Length: 67
Image 1 (cartoon, rainbow, N blue to C red):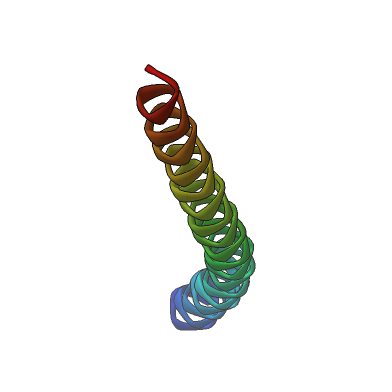
Image 2: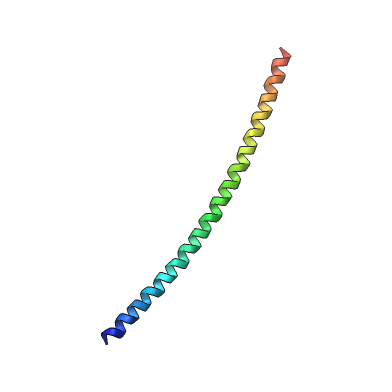
């Protein structure tokens, strides 16, 4: 019967949509985790750069005092 086939097709589409939604949620979670890791690493790099600039600044002051 055509109605039963249509209902079955609709059910399959709903199941497929639900599966894809779960799959997308998993991908979204992975991306969120990756973005948080990148943000943390970027913050750490900024702190290292600031420390390096601070050391370089002190070194330049010491060099100027030597002249």
